[in-house]
Image (cartoon, rainbow over all chains, first blue to last red; front, side, top):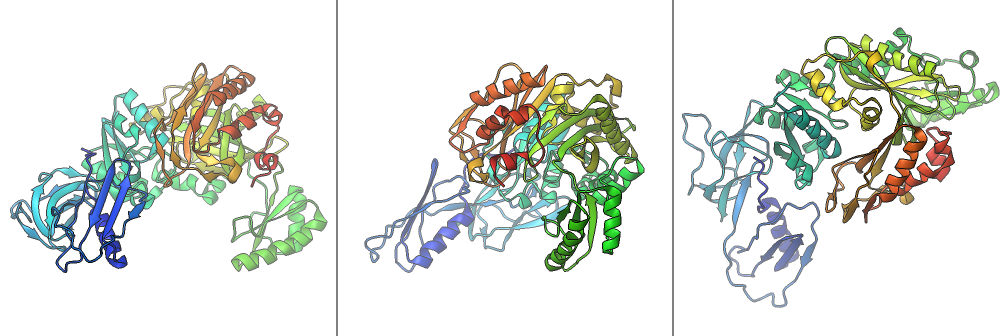
Length: 160
Length: 448
């Protein structure tokens, strides 16, 4: 049941975005073994297009910062990132609050950070899991009633 | 026998338990933190479940996560290994209330033997020798002198409220007793705001000798002889061996039988180790009980031929011990060296990193219990033990020769390990003649 696939670490991506923003950087690249992520932004007021390559969860990161030579130019828009919603616990995944209700979300549902996307039951306690990202659900990766582990990707969300 | 169990541990002991399960035909579920995601031993389990991030508090020590994993994987029992939750009575209780068997003792006997105070009371009742002392605080100098006279010098004055070596003074005679008493009281007051002190006999050059116990759920308890673990550094064992090279048969019997008496009185089942201090006169005194399997269990497995982890599983499943005390024999001599990723020349600082080179020893009489391999990354998150090298030979001298050979063959790097330190120990005359005590390694290498 343990999936050893790589996935994008959502929180790390957010931390990197904040780091760039705090220090006025336009480019960050992280390399760890076989995985790499590079974030690039322009100074246009609209959003922050970014590329997120799949990366292994890391214990030690070594950021290699590359401040751009031309802070004024805008970088071309890159493919929008698709971020996974991962399980914060071990338990059983349920798509709805109870067997008679509709599922919390479906493919195509727009979610906000606080949207409840599923239930994970652990030790007889039913935990509501929130999206923590805003966007549109593009994939459902697990089935109703399936056991899930910590950090297992549950949904893919096209971030907005 | 169980059909499926969960191992609530990691590294070398998790691998050991997985191996025992495989031989018994029991399905085994491993749990791991993000830091252990790539560990090769996980592939030997039938299932592996990620339970949390690297921090032990959110993974290997996290009861809800472990129980969730146990429920999701539908296991019948949990083996806690050693360390982590293995001596956590609350965890054992939670397991049982979730109808999951805890592979270890009952909650009641764990609490009784796990408490220093309660176990000492029980030891007294069972006529297990205890370090003589004042049996409570000393109120006056006169009382101190009387107690010291009765138990004999040297004595150690200890702060009731304390630890960490503070408020402790050793006195070798009545004159120094009086000044030490005042000094100890003052130190205790300053450090713990409590000047209460008590007195115990001071054991000079103590040896650490422990007895392996196995009990079943039908009231049978046996011992599997003793281990001498006197080579220590800061109370961490470095080398363990069986049998203890300096005691005679009579002392051995008394020692082991007293451990059995204690375990029986506590209604103990599963594996336990009863620890003693032994003084220069080969008199032993009860220290404490470890209500779990220990790191050095392979030493006993080697000399008795009994598989202790399999016994734990069998006992938990309700089986009776199939041997009587007289059927258990100690054959030959076994020595274990704990291989840690530490730098002995830099105060044993942990030395994590990639094991670029790992060429383990082999050949007759050699056993290596390790989860490490070439290419394994030793992380900084957990303890630094990367393996245990055990040898078993017909005599102690031969065991030492085999250990020296095995240590010479063993290549592990570039991280720093305790292999060179073990070579030093195996080559020392003191060790070969067993003229050692728990302070020996620190004195000899002048390390602290």
